[in-house]
Length: 166
Image 1: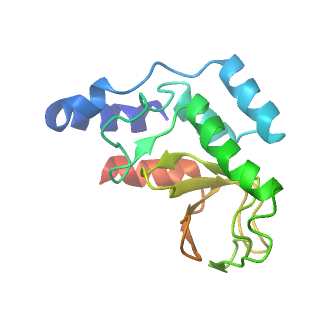
Image 2 (image 1 turned 60 degrees about the vertical axis):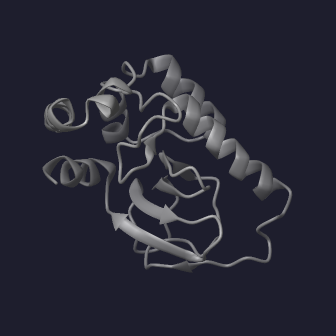
């Protein structure tokens, strides 16, 4: 993942210094442990390797991923907790999504871990509980007010490699 981050950093230094300056130091084992305890699931190794280099961005910074904030582990926990509270209250009980193959038809699932934030409640998520035909750790797109649940990529690593090459 170091090579992927190097490509991203090199481009940002030349073209988007403000975004480069918003990158946090790498995540620690304690950061991962706290997040894994909250979601009650282990995070994929490729995700951890990437986040060990930069733990997302400073909150409310100009977005790195398609104009969206790359969430730090702390911000992931905040966004996840908002969704989890709504889920626990039954807000999504009567809602069904229009999910691509390999994604559950839930409106939101507790093992859909938000990793970006667009400022309006929408996220790219790490899917740790795919449906039949899906792959654990796949990247999906969820919308807070629209039923589409789109498969973006089969792994965090591949998604980031494509992003870096773009």
